[in-house]
Image 1 (cartoon, rainbow, N blue to C red):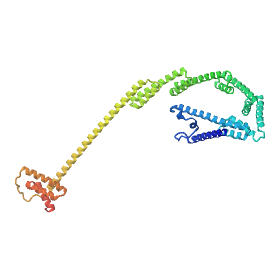
Image 2: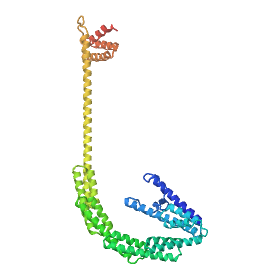
Image 3: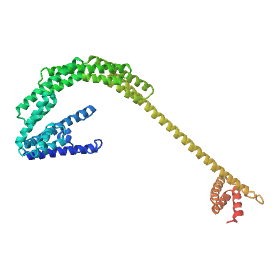
Image 4: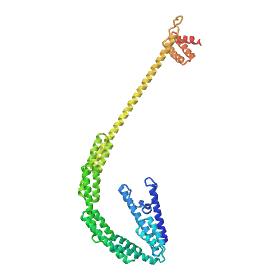
Amino acid sequence: MGAFLLAFCFALVRLAAAAEEKASDEGTAGKEKSVTMESLFLDYSKTELGPLSTTDSKRKYLYTIQLEKSRLTHKLLKAVYDNAYELYRQGDYDGARELSGKILHMDPSFQDAAVLHQASAELKGTSKPFLSGRQLVEDRFEEGMALYRSGRLMEASKKWEESVQLSPGNLKARYWLKKVRGELADEHFRRGQKAYRQHRLRDSLDQWYAALVLDPKYPRLVNVISKAEMELRREEANEKLQQALNLYGQGDTNQALKLLDEVLKIEPGEEKAQKLIAEIRLEIATQHVAQGRTLYKQRQYTQAITEWNKAVEFGYDPRRANVLIARARNQMRIEAEEKRRRAEEAKRREEAEQRRAEEEARRKAEEEAAEKERQAQQAMVDATPPPAEEVKPEPTSEDQKRQAIKHWHTGIIYFQKGDYAKARDEWLLCKQFDATNADCLSGLQRIDSSFGGP
């Protein structure tokens, strides 16, 4: 069962490490999802936390993943360490050294594995493993005593920690380890008090936290840490508040507002910060409203609406902002309709101009055609020789004259088309209806003289 657990732990840790390394190489933006330690142990889709819409929520989510990863990794490595220590206790120093080495390869900061690895290396190849192991623990203890007598408490503590690590049942080493930790805690507490009296709050907290790590039950330590933490928060809040006031005085309202938000994160009940935030937000909102009015006068309605929405974000009355926005949108609608009306009117004028131009062109074409016809008739008349003698025609009726004129025009059309035979026939008919029609006679004479008769 132990071997199976060991194999499973290493396989899982290696899989997570390989997946994380692959994800790091490929990058995260726009890449395909790969199996990582996060996806193995913390499925975000099952947390029901909603979408990660802000940078802060993403940062907290990633921090949670890292904590979960660290916890599970340590738990797995601790199980492997227990197997390694069991091999050490049984005298299998080679196996213990190999397993502890693998642990250190995965997590170089695993202090217990480092101690076990060193001890296993020192005891490698011994003929009497159990005696050698006890002697190693005793040597570590004596080294610690020598360091303690010389005043090197930290080094002594480290040696006794190794002794207890290699032999948890060694009461002597446990006693001296507890003793030296208590003395170190006392020293850190005294240094913290000195730093606190000098108003070096961060240094005092560093010392007291060090004492708390060495002795979690150190008397009065939690109270003084709480007091110093509160004073440090107040000091940081006052410092940021002063910076915000300076920036506000310089006109940098946005940066001042960010600092004041940080002040409230440190001291949520800071009244000065709350009042100043309200004042700055009101000023920023007023600026956005004024800018929106200026843009409205310049007929930049969309930009004006954007400014008024920003004003609402900084605390401006939404009802008043909605009135301004509605007015801008109504004006946009009116101007859009006016623009459409003007476009339609311009289109109608253009179409009317086009129709007039077409009619004028058609009229000119008809006039040119009539002029050409008149010139052709005149040319025919000019080219016809006068008759040898005038024969006084028989008087004709008006109806015959109209028929004669009709055949004359039809003959002109055939003549212009080059169909001279049909033209001659039409003019002969013209002559039959009105023998006095000089045009018909001229046309016939021209055909006869030009083409030699029928």
